[in-house]
Image (cartoon, rainbow, N blue to C red; front, side):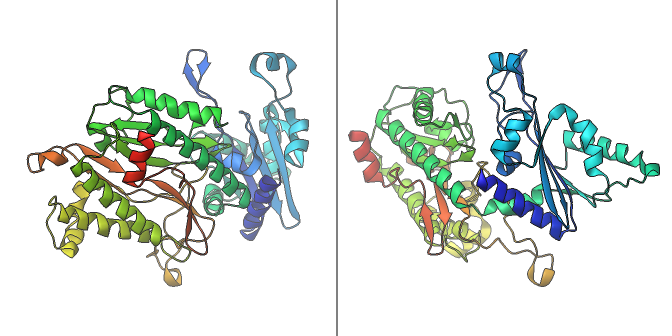
Length: 440
């Protein structure tokens, strides 16, 4: 549990630097699927990042002053009767000892305890927005009602996520290990999908192969809804149906990754359903692969977040000019944005506990404290995806041999002092290597 305790200490130091106060972080509620059935429970990422605690109905409180900090976990009471039905519960005392908190209390004591914990704190640092606001306001009103007894309420409420976001951008050794393992599992799933793909099968059959590999390797859930898009469906960026029958001669785009111990992986590969790229498919595929390689080559500590995107776009635009889908010269195409008809998204996003992970893409302040903030400077320990693509929908002004070809190639990159480590390199992406795997 030391990584979680270390993060609580780091957060407390940040709050102390702001004058101290009280940190309140709630986990996610359980969500009903229908009637008395619930969706599989998934905790709040901010809460888990600070606690490692996975049960619902829990709240972390850290009171910070000049003398130090004290952490309290509020969680469900130990209940042997409910454990028969729903499984093991830590209970406050065992949770306190196992997870390293200073105190453990029952969650039904929150309303009783929080006014006392909040009283005289300089500020509240919590998840601003939604149901959390109403709960915080209720506690503050209780404190204000006791003003005649000498209690004072905090004079400011800050969103604690702004502080934690910057912490989460830089992965520690524990997180990097989990993300490497998640990447290996997801890579094996993609190789499995390539090896069993053939015309006539349905997209959902391939999705089932992915999920099977995730689960058998200890990652019981995907990090996001898997995209298994054949033919023209690959031109839909967030295709979700996964119900079409795969046709001979089409490509299959798979965007899928597992979640392992709270950490996501995110891989996209595009390959021929029959195991052999056609000429036009290969032309566009090689353009996307070259664009990704250009983006990877500039992903390093000290570079700005936008540099991989800019590098990929130059290659994609020149490739589109070369195959006649847009007109040149290159600088004019970049300035006009004509390439965006075929490439309409960014090349990267942060990756971590959430697949589109938290953290600003620009520096907190501009030069000399000004408002014009530059793109975030990449630092060792940051993890981002690199995922250029081309999506050519059928249209009267598009040569027929390019109709309905959607291609995306995505890997997860860990920024290092020397460059970047591709965590998902175990999945082939060279066209010949893909064809060889599918033949084998």
